[in-house]
Length: 321
Ligand code: UDP
Ligand code: MG
Image (cartoon, rainbow, N blue to C red; front, side, top):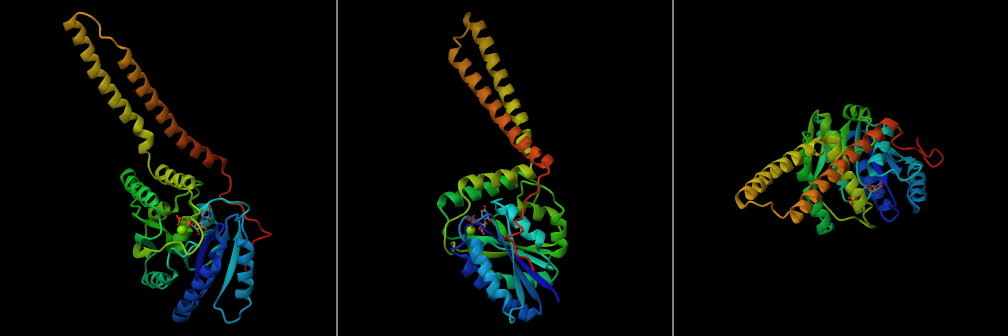
């Protein structure tokens, strides 16, 4: 019998998790009845500071002791907050299914689409990923920065990362096994999965607002994810020093000619304080930016060579079947 795993990372989601569990289990029960499958739901508690974990334990007990259910709930609890991408990776690591679905805890991605994903998987696709055609309940700032980010990302990388895709997707066992061999620490999963290749297919949906609670992605975390995305998939920022260098060199040659000709024709040197200041500040700024870019890459190389685990599981709090 085939098994479906659904991985749900949760960070301070006590307001939504019961509703999410209700909806996701209902969809899975229905789908598994139709296709004669079983399922597991893996909740990853990403070091929540509220009572998410207690609610998860409660939901698990209620669910797993019910003989009628076609699947079980598992809980992986991380030792601290490792971030969405690491939490998702933890869940994917423990998933045992033949098809593995990842979905956010806040019901922004409709669980009802799981049925369609499974149909497409049965038709032979390895990855079925959700693409948002619209996004409700997001601030103008988030929509704008997200759009700009995806445009930049596509310009800078060779991987065909779909615009407006998130981490709502189904992966076949084959795709997940390959994914699990990718060791990088600073993860941008929505780029790593398209990078694998195989047969990938989009499904489109309208993203609703969060069911309850607030976004767990403050600007700082968003920026980190954006940097991870660009830096893991592109060396263009690293090479940007060339372009800066060429532009500055060209400007200085033009200006050099101007000064020489000016002083030859007029017979006295140009007063140079302002131009000198501008040139020094400009080149200084370019150098600092370039060093910063180098720092971003070197910091990530450092993370990789330390080879620390991606996530640490708190065995006492986790409950796996
Ligand atoms: N999340 C997590 N760890 C974090 C931040 C977020 O596991 O450090 C989870 C969160 O519980 C949710 C998913 O990642 O299930 C997406 O987060 P959120 O909905 O806050 O992001 P947004 O939809 O606002 O981009
Ligand atoms: Mg959300």
